[in-house]
Length: 160
Length: 160
DNA sequence: TATAATGTCGAAACCCGTTGCAAACGCCCT
DNA sequence: AGGGCGTTTGCAACGGGTTTCGACATTATA
Figure 1 (cartoon, protein in one colour):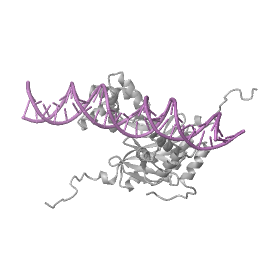
Figure 2 (figure 1 turned 90 degrees about the vertical axis):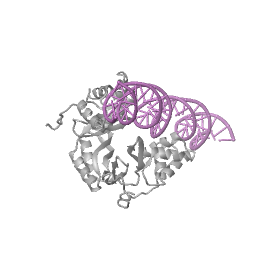
Figure 3 (figure 1 turned 45 degrees about the horizontal axis):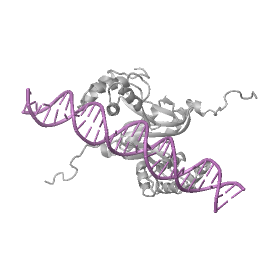
Figure 4 (figure 1 turned 120 degrees about the horizontal axis):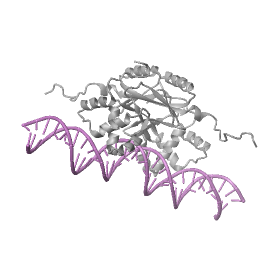
């Protein structure tokens, strides 16, 4: 679930086709399959998971990874974190800018948005003559569930 | 204590020894070698580079990587980015909090500090019952050198 | 001091992601 | 339809980083 929907005029598939066109690349069966798969759900996903699901649809490992990179370049998805040495992506196109609180224990990703951050970064970038294109902000710590006391015996507290 | 430097009462080596103690781990020849090597210069470094230098000092690949993780856990170093699928680290202990502008083209890392960010994040985290332990903020784009026009033919502009 | 328990190490295997390459494909041209 | 040419694909190999495993070292137990 996300913060708020954003107006989307064309489908991801169409958007990707346009992107490919501008780079003189082709929309193939494999690439179409991958876009379908990626946008069939709005959850975060790990590249490796995706690639494995793709294997069942006659799309190879390398094509999977290659296309994920293209989707990122096209602005359809973005890499939000790296968990247990696996890359985690989420939809970017059609969704509002946000960042994440990441629980070190259970891995939960909590979305938040602070519009001040974009402005602050823009200012800093300008001061350094840097042309900002985007950012990734990962906040590490413990989510409320995980930072409560252990509770080793959650049930049958006083039944015996 | 000045703005740039942060008060450091004990050496990284000592700090690490304390950390190991709290986890019932031991300070060995290999771990000492690694701390020496890591803190012999204040520059950013890539794990792989380090591990290769360590090979010359009779420290294995696995021990190198394992100890880098321990150093991170101990708060002595932190991972600041991932470039070309290689992890980049820098000293954390004894250095003030900061983040980076990262040039997509040449890979330059430009440090900056915005104290507002810490406060903003603290507020957001509290709102979600999240116990924040740290963050990593990577700002992507082009540094001033790389975003100036291509200049493919730097010389002889109008000589012919 | 003997014995068990815990830590540590290096080698090799493994995992995720990338890349080089040859064969296959898509697309335009005639 | 057939030829030409750049693109795409899958395979296999590679690279960085992690994990497993057996041998060894250190500490605790007694």
